Amino acid sequence: MSQTARMAAQPTQIYYGWIVLLAIFMAGFMVYGGGLYSFVLFVPPLTAEFHWSRAATSSIVTAFWLSAPLILLGGSAIKRFGAKKMLITGIFLEALCLILLALVSSFWQMYLLRALMGVGKVMFAVTLPYVMSIWFSRRYSLSLALAWAGWHVGGLVLAPLTSYIIQNHGWRTACCAIAAGLLTIAAVPVLLTQKAISPKSLGIGLDGDPIDTSSDPKLRPSVEDAPGTVSELLRSSMFWMIALVSLFFFTTYGGLLTHEAAVVEGAGFSPTLASLVLSSTAGFAAVGGLTVGWFLDNYSVRVAGIVMHGLLFVGALSLLIVTHYHSPLALVGYAVCFGITIGGGDLYFVALMRRRFAHISVAHSYSAWYFCQILTLLVSGPAAGRVFDLTGNYNQTLTLLACSALLSAALAIIVMRKPGLERCKI
Image 1 (tube, rainbow, N blue to C red):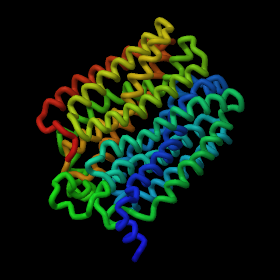
Image 2 (cartoon, helix red, strand yellow):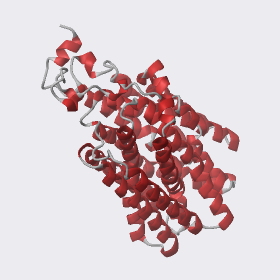
Image 3 (cartoon, rainbow, N blue to C red):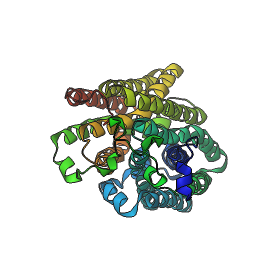
């Protein structure tokens, strides 16, 4: 009996999809927790050492998203090269760039390396909804939430650790430490869990169910085999409405995340507390992602959308209060509201896209939407930094970000008024 047949014949064995999910969780722990959450803490020391403007230093953080145009090729790249190669290549590319980042000092070199880190992150991230669609159907949103929770748990753990390394050993040492984590904690688990490419190769069905699913309509084949194309998606007015909602939503999201540490320190709090706020935000993101993922598998996409937009606005408003009143309570409110938004926001948009475009492969629909998200994140941080440079404080910046959240909510109401959003399962 072959190894795959033996695995399929053991009903008590853990479903291999959960093992794949655990490996991706650990990889995301470093790729996102180290590559983005922790890198936000580099803005103050880079500003202090090189005397660059706040717009310039924040643009190094958001150069992570400069690879946005490549995302449109994500679906085709997955089909051609496979998810495994893209996951591993993305991790190694980000690690290499971090090592080189510790060796350079000029702005253009740092910006270029940070942009290449973004290519690695995109190669990793764009595959996740596709991989989860291969292994899960009934638990799709929850599985994706668990995969993305690794990103936020990484921020929870790595933000204070990175802050400690920066304060005691410098930001260059912090770069090398994150790179070491990428080569071990991230790469090794992914490499060890690639012996099976799908449940079918193990003789089982999605979610670990029997492979014959004809009697249960909920257990139909994974959406990676859907026939729709990217060009069909781009011709849809509904897609562009969702893209516009995403524009305003992630303008607020990106502006808050990029400048979070600088806002907290500028309000008179210590760098250590700023890192703890960032860490707490990541922790609530993990909890929020799991909660929203479970909710989307069982209840209304509309309600999830209302909650996400409301929390985003309250988060921006809370951080604005911090700048005026030096309020620890407002900091807690910000960490909770914005953290849950980080964890659940992407899940909501993925669920919305899957529901609206059930006939199009996740590899294609997610790549097209993710392009809109990343392009927004690319410009939102520097734009917010530019407003700060012009005004000398974050009051106007945060006010504009709160207004952007309201615009996103108003447009989302139009999108969600359309029929067919009772459940996100397809």
